[in-house]
Amino acid sequence: MNVSGIEVSPSACTAAEQRLEEFKDITTQVVCGNFCDRPLPFDASFLDLVVDRGAVTHNVLSDIRGILAESYRALKRGGLVFSIHLFSDRDSRFGRGREVERNTYAEIGGYSFKDVPIVHFTNLREVEELYADFELVVVEEQTIRRPYHPEEEEAAHFTIVARKP
Image (tube, rainbow, N blue to C red; front, side, top):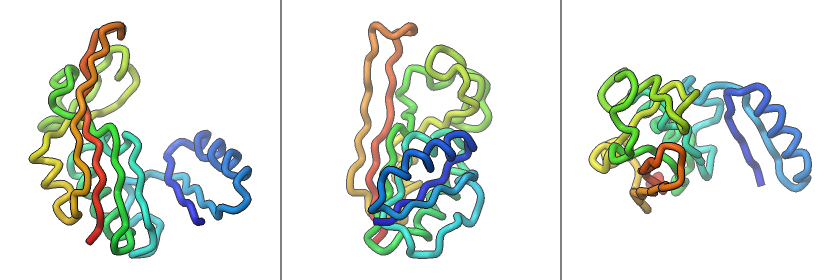
């Protein structure tokens, strides 16, 4: 098995490399860099799976489009994109902070977004547009009420599985 990853934080890259040393039967590559940089450091039709664990949502819309276009380019036919925690505009924090562009906010603050520089909130129509080149396999919008959270928030986000045809 071959596993590649991109991480912007040098300390997280080092930690990942150290952790991955334990898995002798896996060939790994940790790229320390920004996944908004294009092109991604992978050949076309190289990857089987792209996992976005809540990173894409922390970009402006043009970068989100670029990330997904590069993911499409780098995926093999039948390859999957798995995105979790793509924040929904139904999230109780939507509209807070300084609007950078439509549905994208900076300086949201609060308990959950205290040190988060930017958040893009989306909706189903935009998800369909962003993933238009892919076959949508799973689209789930979840709202989680956190009554004992310091700010009693309702977090809302999408989970998406999309396949390159």
